[in-house]
Image (cartoon, rainbow, N blue to C red; front, side, top):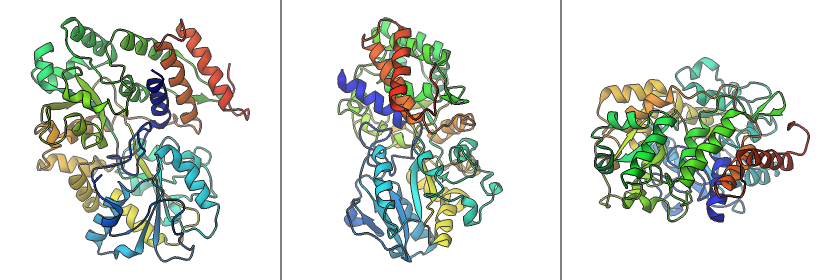
Length: 470
């Protein structure tokens, strides 16, 4: 149970957002694990330089190379490979500075690296839950306008992606993501037919169209001696947290509203009634649940259709449930993960940096090539709509012929983060998750006690007086 609580707490803190298929992403306990669509790639196979730790050889600040900082190379390496292949760029001109840590550890690693003014940095891979640590700091990042961009250049990029990359102090756009990490509810179609008499994704969507219906369907499954509706409470939290209507801090005050108490009661019901398992998300026991008949579904973001979640849950290609899964939009629009590309303040290779960012965001040919090769839902809505209209992309094999892009397209446009992002989100979401998990576990008798514990936890973590707690 301690592992359950700790894992969900980390998940809450690190899941405000993050990457496409677990690119430059975290390991177990973070919002995404280390690894990726090409998780088998090793440093020995990399065509670009890949430094595996913060202690590896440093690159001088006057280097002609484009140096990319990331916490692992599972997004950056496939991106560099494709970029060099399509543009004819010499791979030796790009240096991947890979710290080989969990995403949540990247802030400390980056800061240590940047303390030395001689260390080269051109582009920084930033995860949304902690990106403001760098985006709000003009000593670490510069506006994209200094690379020659105007806001109109990103008119085809999903709004929430643009909002997440803006400084909350100046409003300057300082980071942009190549992906829209929209997500959905993936379910076992054979179990849905057996226990719910559901025979199509449309029928399943009607069963999980909102949280009240989701809860009713969870009860129906239990009454029919069927599986848990969701593998973990952590998966539910990923979605529910995306539907928060306001920022966690408003006018300098912590906002503890009906959203908080409603989720705490909802989570308590799911957990105590057995509508979710008690397995911790990212634990070794998590994805193997998908090879049993104990779980109906997993909440999955764009990167989760590969080896990280869904394919792993199916037992891999040829596994026990491979091809038996389908995807629907689920009860609420959400995104989970995503990595933002931000130019470092010490950048000395602006032209190549801009060309790299262009290729994966506003360059339709580049974004299309990456989407089709990696199975990743890109942030460029024009590109994604064209791929869907073309009808040639066959979807993730684990879905048995369903194109997940069609589902994610419905979700991505409805994601709204305007005015909802604060520098305190990781801390606050951790403390909120701690309190809710303890409530589910019986440590608190009432939701009111849990909310008091939540506020006390925030007060202990944010001690500089910048957030008032009432």
